[in-house]
Image 1 (cartoon, rainbow, N blue to C red):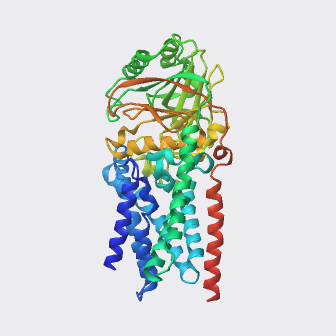
Image 2 (image 1 turned 90 degrees about the vertical axis):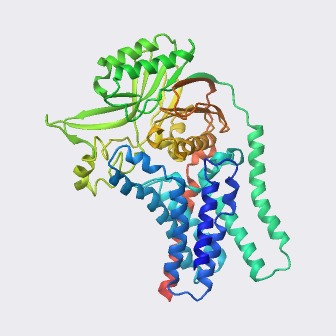
Image 3 (image 1 turned 45 degrees about the vertical axis):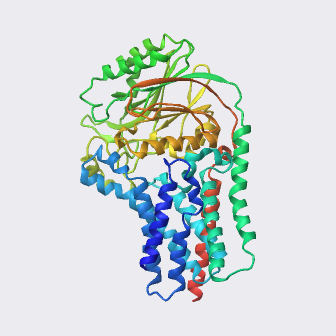
Length: 534
């Protein structure tokens, strides 16, 4: 078994090396699972006791090591808003839960292999894996950061066809490649076929043809000219000093100063990062707020100016109208929101409430069933575990009719969710985030790379404003046209092209995930039927 564990660790190493933010290593994904597949094959074919347990432990070693090495920075984000011990425990959700679900896919693969041929079993493994990824982006403990298709984000030129498949097309590509090559190598080692060249060429074509198609799309893609000038601001406010130690007015004036430093009279949108307006604001009283008047004064200098910013807001009710509403001593109820707001120079204000909330930090998972734990989460500090949300995305429209998608931080890793903004009329995507909690780790770089996938899937410019970096402009091909340095106060200006066309993926969404989930139910039925027959 020692050899098998070493093979499992080799797969984990290859997966980690292939993962963003490493550049030009993504093709390692095409072979990364092969050492693990050989380890599992050895367990299945040899006279080991408790084979199911050994399959689980071997595959689990790969998945846990890969996950932890790739998203080690999650602890930084958790520790920023809660005590260290609690942060360590909650970090186990992304570290361990994702790995557990991956491992279950391999365990079910073993159940199929016991009584079915390799082709059926391989189909089951792919389906179980896609089902795990779909589940992990859909339930209350969602964290789709490690979806296999995300692994190509650092080499976006070779996955331009994501506009048809989304990231699940990448997941399918990776697994078909690994299983195809594994079967070729296995047959060569143990069956000694006389014709090895043909299947090897076939495997190579399976890799080269999609890449060639993608490069053709990439080189021939032309944006329709529909210009709009955008300014993104990176204020570089230390997230630990943001509240209390720095006056709200000072932060607002700094944002305005940076905006004015690069803006032109025809600038149409100013994009400020997540919670850039740090004062907790009553949405019903926004028009009488001193901040509102100051921002209107700022926008008056720009004829078609709009300000899209992050803000922390709240809304009062006379009864508990939502599951996240909290009682006040006055008898009223309140919902707090991690929100986006857009101010027009004509005076109109629009709000969007973040929907995809971070489990344990911004929401209590399975809140309806675990409502009795609300006091415990509230004790961790502030609004931890208790933000309100809106169920569906909404688009901000300027007075001139331009639609902007306000995507807040964590939401940008959901391709299907971001596509809903586009179907609602968004002509560009504004990602507002505060990656400063993570520190100078690979987390901020991965987050930036994933934004390129959203640009390809929707063929929309992504305008990214990050509090401490990395802010950027990403065109419709996924190219980073401009970007800032980490931990540097600055502003960038760029003329982007608005787009109204709808891609196949935007129209159909994660159809591959639905197909994979249906297939996994069929394969589960095969397993249960064989067990019953036995």
